[in-house]
Length: 385
Image (cartoon, rainbow, N blue to C red; front, top):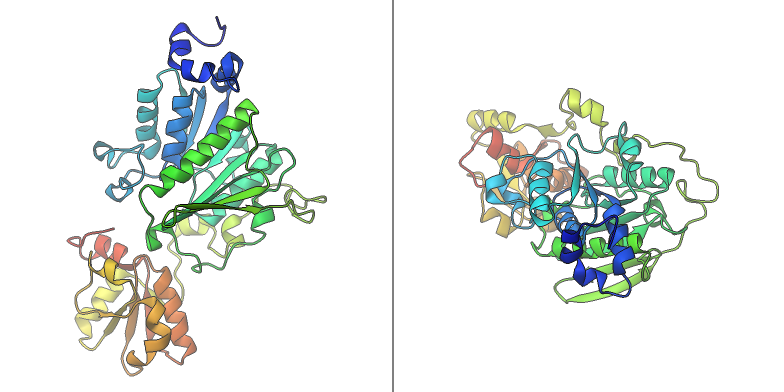
């Protein structure tokens, strides 16, 4: 018998307990483990589901978002009935339905510079299910400072990658990515799409690594970056080395506390964004575009999305040139008319605007928030994706 596991839990987890590398001692370790899952979306859903089913005793869930119908193609912790609910509450109910012996701790304000170290310090392992660079650097640095292993992954379209950072003297996220890419260079999943089953594959890999760390079993991905291509159904591996000059985990670290990561990643500070909207000089809002369209019949509106996106929704009267073709077809864009460029969320169109400006266009603007914000602010009949 066990002083930690009930008779019901012993029966529930017996397939684990009969494994030589788990046993009763290992299952008790899982029960006593405290795991923080940062994000309850595409990656966070399978991470949390499988760790809960495996018998992890305490799961911390971090997310400030609510469930949207566009999430349900891949975020399997949530259902249609959960649309509009906070994700952490929806995920909590799903997890408890799988494992009623689980203790779930909710962090609904998300991870911020002010709370990250306090939250991370409460857990044994952190599993990263985020989708943006500022949060990845923030979580990494907090894990290094608090001495916590970090199970990392990222996904895009048909590809994913996973590894373990800050484990047994291994490298950290900054060893792999010393600096973030320029803003807008790497499209998000919202811009570029993601195969619905992909986060399931990668998230399960992350859950596996977390279980192995808890059990101290097998060989972790620390020092190895596992790359997955779903179209070719192929895995390959890249070796990672700890950077002795890394400012976070190197021989002489210079990072003594978490920083302002939005500025580090070339974005406006969160505090500034909360106070008022921050737009580039060439940005306009959907309402401003609507006023321009009503007042200027000669306005040239350029849609730089891909044809499969345009098939879902489009603004009437726009000209369609995919971003990848703009450099070859830019002469089709008139210099003697006002031009407004848009995409889904505003990132690709900003690239197009900057390219056109480099070619001497002075009459070009970017639609901030893209067609998604247009659908929210101007034409609610459009289907969002």
